[in-house]
Every structure is written in C-alpha cells, then in structure tokens.
Length: 526
Image (cartoon, rainbow, N blue to C red; front, side, top):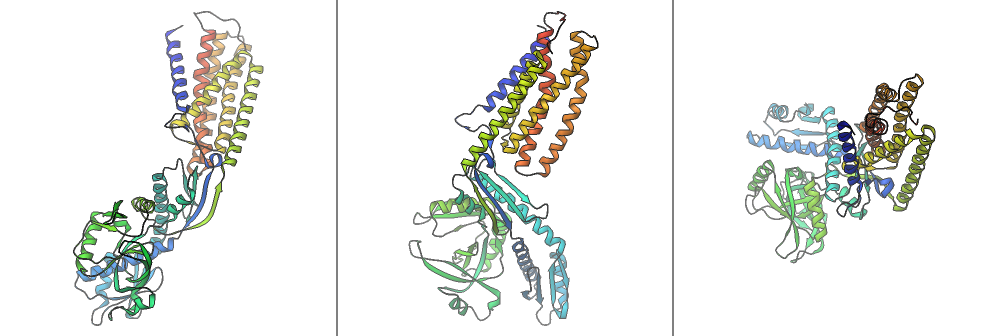
C-alpha cells in the first residue's frame, strides 16, 4: 500500500470515529441529536407585542425629561397633559415665554415634532421614530423571551418574528417542556418595573385614596393602582389602593441584576442593583423626596411602598407575599430584562408526545425504506462498484448525523425530508462518476485511466450541482423559520458531506481495490 493511500485511509477512519462518537448518547447528553417540536412534542405559542404601550412609555419619559431640564434651567414647571398615545400639550406658567420650553424640546426631544397652537406647546412623536420604537420593542421582546427560555433550560427553542420586518407577532415553539404552564407564565409576565412617588395615603378603596390627595395635586396627575395589604408577618390580608404620580422617573431598564434574598422574618424577597445611570437617577429621586413614600410597581401592581429615610443610589429590595418559587421566577424575569410591552396570546397549542412518536416512527421507516431501496438499486445496476457507492452513502449519513449532533442542530420532520433528499443527491454524485468511468471504458481506455478520468471529469459537474442547491438552502435558512430552517440545515450539511464521500472516500476505495501493489487491472465490476 502506498504512503498516500495510508494517510487517506487513516483520515477516513478518523472521520468515522469522530462522527460515531458524536451520535452515541451519554449520561450527560442522553439525546445526542435534538428533536424538534413536531417530533418530541411541546408547546406552540403565537403572541402579539402591544407596541402602543412602548409608544406611550416613550412619551411619559419625554415629559419627565422636559420637566427635569426645566428645573435645571431654573424655569417654572409647566402644566402638561396628554392628548393621545403620541402627543402631549404643555402650558407655560403665566409670564414665561413658550420659546424657553420650545428650546428645551428642540435640544432634548429630537424625536418629537413641536408646534404652538393657541399659545400652547404641542409635542407629537414623529412617525419614523414611532415606527423605529415599535420595531425595537418587538426585537427586544424576542431577545427577552429567548433569555428567559434559555435560563429555564429549554433545549433548542424556536423564537421568531412573524409577519416580516414590521410584524408585531412572535412564534414560540418549546420542545419537550416539562411544565408548560409555568414556562408560559414566565414568558407572558411583562415584568415592567417602575418606581413612582405616592400621593396621599393608601386606603382600601379608590375613592378614599383620591379624597386623601393634597390640595395642590390634581386627580388628573395621578393613577390609582392596587397592592396587597400585609400583616406584621408579611402575609397578604387584603388589598390597598395607592395614588401614584403618572410620571415614571425610574424603570426596569435601569436595573443591573436581581436575586432572591431572605427578609427579616426569613421570607423570600428580591434584592436588586441598579446601573450607574440608574443609580444616579435613583439618588436624585430619593434625595429630593426624603420622608415621602416611594412605590415599587411591578406590572401595574404595587409590591411595596416604603418611606424614603435617606438618599439611596445603587441597591434596593422588593418585598411581597412571594413563595420561594415565585421569588425565583421573578428574579429570573427581572435579570433577563423586562418586556418593552405586554404580550397578548393569539394562539396556544400543545403538541402531545404521541404525535411526536408517530412522526418519528413514520419518518424513520420512510428513511430506512428509501435508503435500502437506493442501496439495492445501485448494487444491482453497478455490481461491485455499487458496494463502493453504498459505503460512501453510509458514511455520508454518518457525517450528516454527527455534524447535527456537534452543532446541536434540531431534527424535525422537514429535516428528515432533507436527509432523504441528501441521500438521493449523494447517489446522483456517484452515478455521475460511474457513468463517466463507463464512457471511458467504452472508449477503450484502461481501468486506471478510466477511473482517473471519470473522477476528474465529473468533479466540476457535481460541485456545480451541489453548490447551486446549497445556495438555495442558504436562502431558505436565512428567510425561513422553524421547520424550514431544519430542512435547510440538513440539506446543506448533507450536500457538503456528499462531495467528500463521492470524491474522496469513493476514490480511495477504488484505489485500494484496483491500484494495489502496482498491478494493472484488466477488468472492473461496474
């Protein structure tokens, strides 16, 4: 055996060992190849992001920025009222020209159009800015959901936007979820953390709360939110209502991390840390409101409303009647980031494992039947050379499954279809080579020359065919989602492997059989 044949054979053996190890299940990884939702079962959700809430929150932040800048420039705080989700009006105090506030708006609020109808300043969010915010909120929602699902350990989830670049719907597929109800609750939880100043005193009904407002605070400037009334042991014993400022000086976007801690009585609480910018804003807020109540609001519910005793800059706690599991889930949600807006569930479907087992059985049966028929066809038609093609096909399948295992790719029913198509195209590569060899033999060339010419002349055709198919698969992967991507992945890996097996593995086998010890073979079984 020549030296070149030795290293080629060694490479083939190494490839077989590497990819065989990849597909053998282990204790740490009992599922070497991940199965998709259609094979394993799980949960399928379609959710809509309520982007109008993002727009409304942006306008609230703009109002706060305008007020804060006015204070810094020693201007009286103007009277501001919302007219719709995108617009608010500002009435400067008597004797103060509107030009001062218009200058602030031009400098600090570039995303707003400013007009002056009837002596008022009207600021409206620009259409382009609103569209960008809506797109950003959907993207952020996808990323937040992905972080939450990944933290729960769900293997190979599919989380994708539906409806193109302007779509506000998200498709979520969670294969093999053990506790779908808990996962769905965690996904849907908006976790919009807000810090709002409390006006008046909390009470057991809304009317009493509004009646307790100070004389200089109008009802239009506050919003009433519920919260749990707790006893001395931290247990919920009823409901209280709080009148809170409509303005939101600090939100969950200023949060750096959150963790479960123990309270004074051993109850679970949430400790949080703020970003440097959030800490600065929190310090200004608490320093200016010592002696007042600050409400910590989560998803429009007051979790706690402690009195500010001193300036606080970087850390705080969220108290509530949490169980250990609820506290852990809430800390996870806060760490992964709050959703930019609430989600509305449009479709919810649970795929049972029986459907997955039936799909696996049908898919595997079809694949094996097709694979065996292909092997029989090449063995009958190409005789001894058919054994060569069969070995190349088996190795192609091994490389395909091994690559999927190494890259943690998800196998779906379309993926199984991709494997079957790959096997068919791999056979086609061998057929092209074998037919070229036959043509050279008919032309009267020797066995060695025919083999050499057959592989050389067929190479360009096979590469061209496979390359165009791989390019099409790349487009499917880029613009498709879920099962379509699974089909594209298996097709791309399989076609790449088929070039290796058809021109390297198959050629080595021919050389080992017909080029041994310098002999000149006179016949070839093809």
